[in-house]
Image (cartoon, rainbow, N blue to C red; front, side):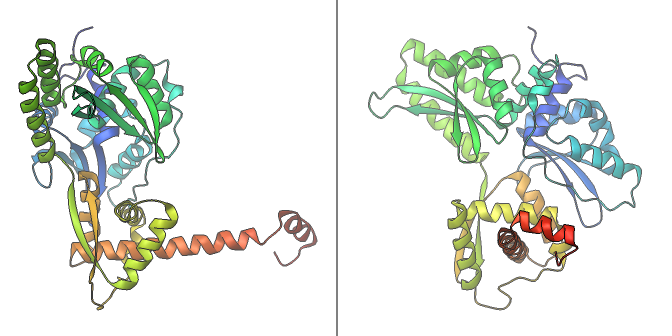
Length: 368
């Protein structure tokens, strides 16, 4: 099978749709400006920019190809028929661009999608390759007992159907439950078999692919010192491309609430803060009228938040309604905590009502 080329054909476009579903976003700011973002290796993004001849490349906080407003259809019209995860968002954007005065609110993608509905589509393989090229993680590891080096390739997704299809199409590796998500893993010989299959199709992970091929070459020839050097190079390149960490200062009251909720949900404080940011971005009207719970109180407590490029874009939008990034995130936490309490109270109220009693009262025209 021939490899992928940067051209607008029925092979490459599904790949780009899968890549966008994995590493892309739509962002709307307070002026109703819309940005379509692709994140990844800068050389890969420049090739996309050259192919579609729209948008611009930015390098901070991470490399991204950004397409604004009226230029978006020049890209989106080409790949929309292949988008699956962000399909509803794409349709919202298309409608909004037809009516610029329309207020735009971007909802999060659905939590459950039946990918098997697309199993008969000829383009699905290239969609999955694009998704893999966007989200897969590569690392060289050393077994603690045998001291043998091996290549590990993994992918984490909330969509079990997609991970199963990926596993079945590639016919290597295995699947594990991973918190509330699913993890595809290929290690040792499985990972080497995987790169042999995907070598012609990986455009964003070229650096990782080149290092993996070098690793195989050194492994076959027994050059273990060269593998040690290669491991260092891969760690260095991953560090440059890794997510950033932000230290957020909180007052004691907000810190205790975040700590308590994180424990009850059995997630880290970083993850809880991330969810608060996503929630507030999806509920901007409520966010605008929410005040920072800490107010003028001393902020002597700290939480470390892992921030990827997608989250950074949402923080930028929230910060446009606030003076500082940190206070915008505290407002996001305040809103999220408040709405969680309301939801909890509603659930407790509903639990107190017997559904059979409710039905009888409704028949009688009673107080419910």
